Length: 253
Image (cartoon, rainbow, N blue to C red; front, top):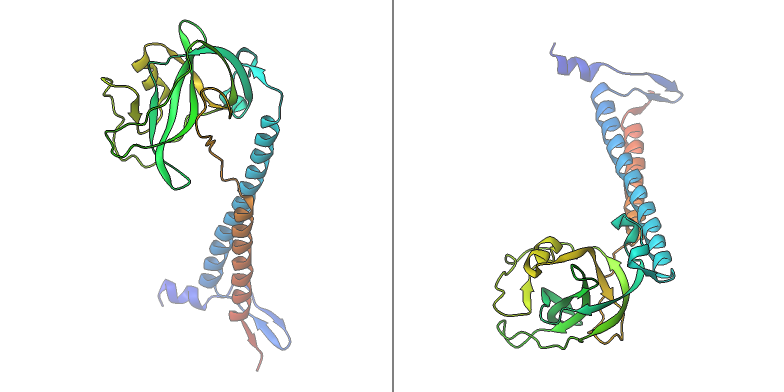
């Protein structure tokens, strides 16, 4: 007799509750336990994700409502600085701006405009000024004004935009400005400019002299989806357990 046949015939337990007989096999029990472990693990993982998103959303809301701080008073960790409101005095580098490509706002294709603001002779903060529509052709870049002189600036600190699907490499043709970018790399931009950049960007507040169409990215922190997925995994686990019991339970003759 082969091992597989022996395993099929072997029963883990035999429980008789008149008029029923619960007598599960080894293979069906092993498969069921493995699937239950997997599905329950996925369900609890979704619950953990939902809790994480709820906590993060609460932290973001609380940070945005904090009193405005100065750059020099902020925590050292970039994670602790994210979404904190700040203010500082600086001067725009009006000769150098960057256009982050492939942005769509209200069905209009265009760019996010970034311009560095010098806070000292050797350091600057890259400012996200908002959205601007694209020109009629790829060669026709949009025109915008940049304030000159010392400016009082305020906004929310954030990490540079994450790299999405890249349609092309970052353009390094600096014969003309603004330079079109496919992604924002602060180290790369710092090398182009020849001076150091702060390790985060600033989303400029609305109605500032340098602000364009306000388009602060929003995080998709809808924990309800994760709770829904968790419910589905737990429901499937319950269904599998019921099927296991029904299939392995026979009515006594």
